[in-house]
Length: 86
Image 1 (tube, one colour):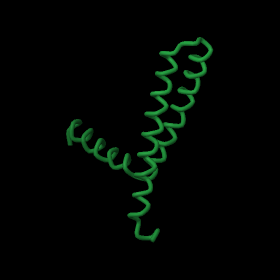
Image 2: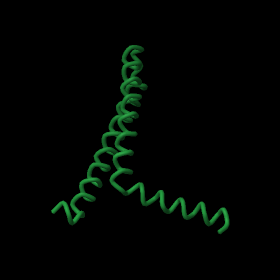
Image 3: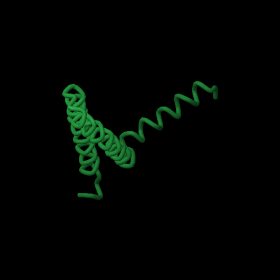
């Protein structure tokens, strides 16, 4: 098996991880760390009275909230597809 074929096989397995429960939880956790950065940016913008930076932080927060909501929805759908969960 060539290096390219090995890389493609590994990439395919990682794509499956992205849509698994552990992968979704990891993505949600990563979003939580992003929220810390956004809060810091918003505080700094308010201290400096910089409206443009504050708007940027608010738009980033909205994107983070939307992304997290999509991840939670997908996590719930995975749970509802599970036969053992009912």
